[in-house]
Amino acid sequence: MTVNTGYSNTLFEPPANFSDRIDQLEEQAVTQARLLLQVELGFALMEYLELDDEPITIVWAILSGIFIKHPRLENLSQGKKRAIANCRQIVPFSSRFNWLNALRDYICHVPES
Image (cartoon, rainbow, N blue to C red; front, side):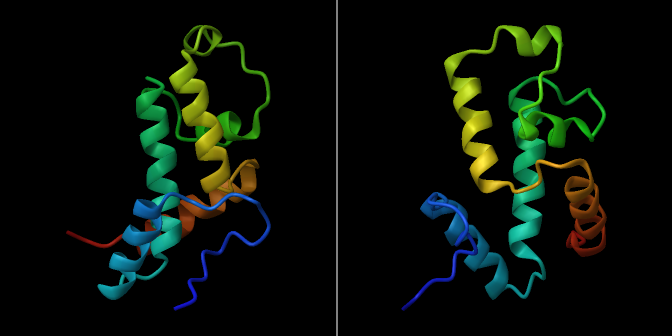
């Protein structure tokens, strides 16, 4: 079985549990499963970095790699730096408008519970 991971433009392959979760959601007829997980991963990263009280637009700024003078970003642990680097490979929203468009799509496709 050939799996289309959607990451043909990078040398990175997402973790198996990420791809497995996309497959599970698609089997449940969830539309835009990859987008939903990518946006949720951006949210989870902000929570891990203790930036979940910042505006939602901080995600693209962190993923873009631009310098941000912020007290919580000045002395990041190696684990947090690694989390940002890993997230940059999986979440392709490092520009402001890509992130805002992803949020709009997320709102339209998030499953109701």
